[in-house]
Image 1: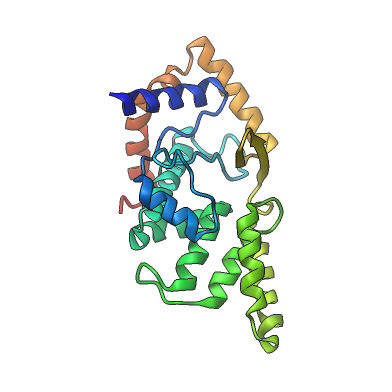
Image 2: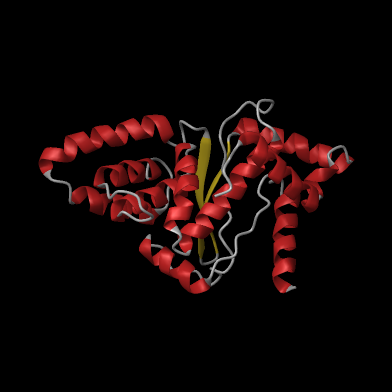
Length: 244
């Protein structure tokens, strides 16, 4: 019962705070979550049994993409993060790669890690690992990602540095958060350092409009978790995003 209350509390907090699209809360094993955090250079999280919530998205004309499709994206983002943190690299990789190409920095860093060590049946590739991490560190990012990128670049032989730099530039041109219309920021609340990526201003205006509609009752499904879960399942079928 307690976990159920936590999930409802987070869902209500997100909705009442103006963030409509994230409806899935991932629950991860504490030991595995802290182990994965250590792998990526992150500090152990005393609340690691509750998966981190990061709100991100693409810059898209508000009329060109249904709200439910955004929910599908966030569903897969949280599922991929959960699977990665508990060591299910093979299962997490397809979603992580799709999300990395959308400009999500945590997904980019995780794809980099999988390529660096050849996990989840993926071929080991230092070049791809550096390219994806190079995208993740472009602009505002997590300090641990930037530090890991510097360490990896320092190990590249001099004769290959130019080629790696060209590859990183190519990935940034195609997959950077700026290219994909994502604004990322870091903030600190007490002893917690938070890294958050939000929709572009254009998308934020659309969210505000939907919130006003929700208050009038014209879109009651926004606050109806059962309806949202149903719409996610239907939209997943419509968009052919694989379940596994």
